[in-house]
Image 1 (spheres, rainbow, N blue to C red):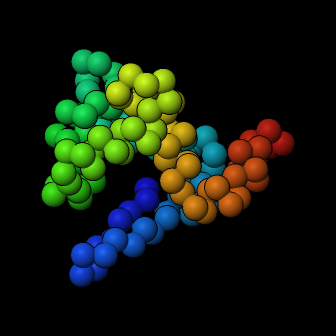
Image 2 (cartoon, rainbow, N blue to C red):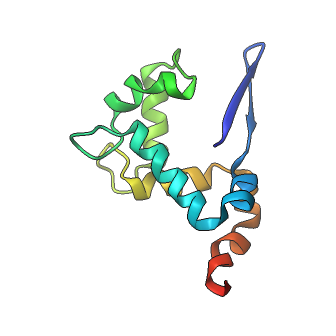
Image 3 (tube, rainbow, N blue to C red):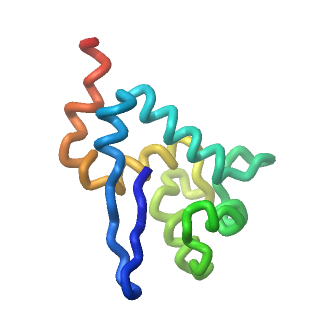
Length: 115
């Protein structure tokens, strides 16, 4: 997926999503996003909550994140205002955060329509 690389306290974003779509196709890419959601979600609620994101932040390499930073991440993708991310909201957020996908989104979104 996408990765944050840290160099001397500066974060650089490396966007792997476009190459994932090229390799997996649109359907495979969406499936991988759903797998990522499953890893981060609260198993009882079926949502990514503050608690589940904080608990699983080690998986993301973000073990030193402050609570307010975790809340900002949730708020960025929370479309319905419930304070958590559904699978749909998570997938939308991941696409929105990928510069490579946002630049070429019309091509990959309609790819499977003609195949």
